[in-house]
Length: 472
Ligand SMILES: Nc1ncnc2c1ncn2[C@@H]1O[C@H](COP(=O)(O)OP(=O)(O)OP(=O)(O)O)[C@@H](O)[C@H]1O
Ligand SMILES: [Mg+2]
View 1 (cartoon, protein in one colour):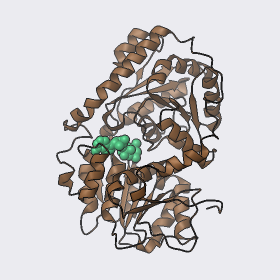
View 2 (cartoon, helix red, strand yellow):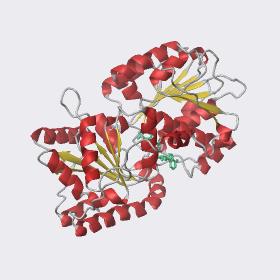
View 3 (cartoon, rainbow, N blue to C red):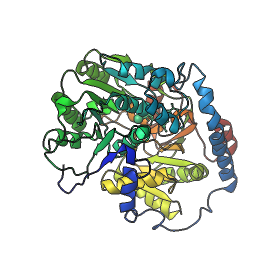
View 4 (cartoon, protein in one colour):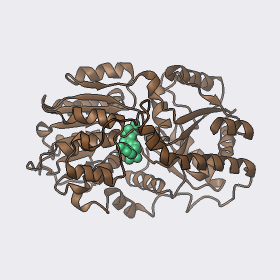
């Protein structure tokens, strides 16, 4: 970790209003160039008004339906949001129950109902858990950590690792919100840019962060004694153990822990080989695993649009303008270069677009996400850096401007599922639109369809009637 970093340790009692993320935004408000301070103001006259109004109507209708939908789904045994228990029956401490209700949660989701008793059992039990995107895994393991800490002990007891900076911040915010009524529980963020005084041990019972910084804090800076960690959470566990850089660091952290440390692994996807690896490194785990056909959510409708080349994809994207303006959209590109090209062109057409890619500074990235979360920009153009975990409930449309492809040129099914999972959060409805530019990408669509055993429907953005029948 670099020495120019600075310290943030959040006292949960004080964190009800000024969250870490807010502080970042205040400091960096002026820096990122967004569509508000750059780009032309040319209006979107080209778009067909009838088309716009139809799309607006459709998206608005689906947003209105959403409110009741969660309750309906929570009563439907086939839904991943279904539960037979209440939060009270999960025996949470009263202050955590207050935190949960304060967040507006009425009932647990299935993963929360099933995983919490396993995570809180005595003696501690390990868990590898899979649950669809947007079904509340964060709250599940955050409640487990908040329940687990022993307040008598003024040292770090729970470590939670996530693959990206943005996600670590988001998880921290959930812990802060849920722990609002637990004044003595403290949280620290082990993320790039966060400087701590070396050599003194942290007193925060929970540390959430990215693997590189956590490793530094455990080894080089000796801020955390890994032997005293009793709960270890890996969010997006499959990517943490399957991609090279993350795997090396995660394994090194894992080796520092004691055998008694409780291991909790979560993700929406676990490729077979990763699952086997996880079972090898996690002793005697409880397992919550989805069947392949359960992995995709019925609430997310999937389409593809046939295009010729990137300019044509851009035109098709512009045809979806109506939906882009109503709620929020995330557009995924394969490379930073493509993301930059697309955001420039969308801005030239007068859109307020945010761009987030890996080469930006962490402060810029935090500011961009915060602005998008607050609805300042309706469209976020990004790369895979945002494909996992990011939770912005108003995202009603995900566009794969480039389809997710692995190094072997085959469909990257896991990334696909995570990307489309940025919409349809917790029972909301969502649309995923894939831009297909040629035979190769059509093959990728077929591979994805076969993998999940789901049909992806062709969408002709110029045929209003057809669109209405497909989308409604
Ligand atoms: N019991 C609940 N009742 C209502 N809303 C909930 C409940 N649990 C979680 N949520 C909401 O659901 C949304 C999605 O939760 P979360 O981000 O934890 O999903 P996830 O399972 O981690 O998804 P992903 O696989 O994409 O990371 C959040 O906005 C969260 O506030
Ligand atoms: Mg998540």
